[in-house]
Length: 327
Image (cartoon, rainbow, N blue to C red; front, side):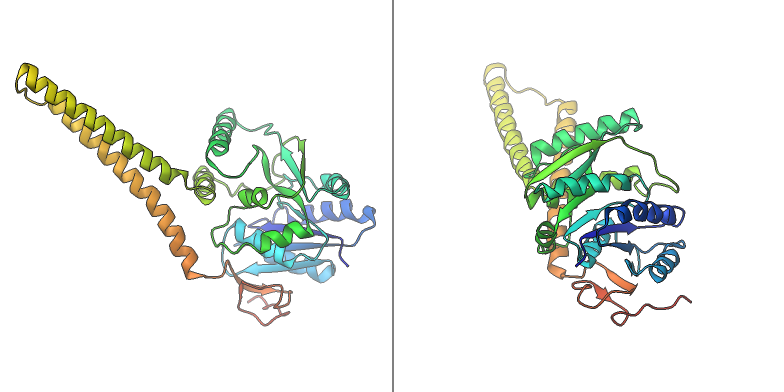
């Protein structure tokens, strides 16, 4: 039986994947435990898949799956968790910002009965603006979301087999793993490590991607934006009622007065902006309902050395256990 599974989503990581693989092997082999490394190529456009095939050919402990296009990290992590067979599963990135040398510490804490062991980065070496924005976002998250998400607690974590099974039982199409990790519960412990820079290559997370990811998180685990829209509407109604009463009183006491143009324009613009924002919030929820109703697979597999059972809920274009040769 496999004791440890390492799940590694990859997207255009050809510059660093071999160094990452060597570092993981160097860390795991002295532990004397059976392990596997499950790579998921998320539709890379560089030579990542070719390197993964070479690694799998040279080492039977390496398994890989390659998507037909870029489906996103959430889908890649889901595929990796489906591939995993270990009693303990470690999720980590291939860019060496998740240092493999912390895996033994995670396994030690897991042996003390914890189902989730989180390696939490301290955001050292990050810019002041990004750090401030992250802190503000997590403060907003703690107020709005129905689950607890800790600043700096990312995807670098160990999960027990029962925690993995709980995650795989969740059927939603729009997945926000940080929220799902917290939602399933179980005994959790964390430790902090100093943030490190990428070993090579460029980050795939631009400001736009981070913003969209943050919005996904806020919407995925609460309906408070809709409640906020209701509260805003009621507040505006009461404000308009008070303003109408004030106008009536002013007419009774001082006679008819010509309405102010600036006041009218300001009210129209403000109300129009609030209505558009509210429609946008409602549209986000309706769009998610629409996506869920289509029941599409989370990803499409182009090639893999896995069995059909492992690819459950993902559409495969290749016969089970066979990989399509490169053109």
